Image 1 (tube, one colour):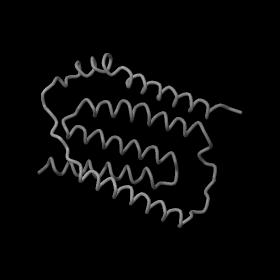
Image 2: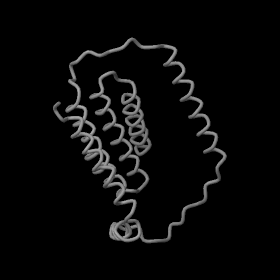
Image 3: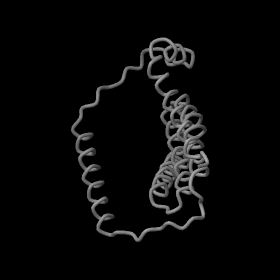
Length: 162
């Protein structure tokens, strides 16, 4: 009973963070809401008994990418500068309809897909995952590091004084 209450609380926290990340007007608050949503996702990984993925979610997404986004926001245009354009209701309605159609198509595709049962055999320890990342999966590991490097360079370019 208590486990279900905590689970639904974490789900509500994640959905609240996701909703605030796309609905708030201040881009800095959007980034903070994204951090809240990603923290909820990390908590959901714990419910799935994937503590390694939860820790990686916190370290990589919250600790690195979200903070890089916040630095890029803070180092770019002034936060107090008023540049609000009038909201176009037709554009908002079209965006909502397209998002609903895409969500419906994705939901239908997920419902029709037969999901094979995952095997439980194998070594899923931190040692085995680390060895796999640095031997067999070194190309994706290095690709992620290049993406982070490009993000940092982009933040520095945005922060450059003219």
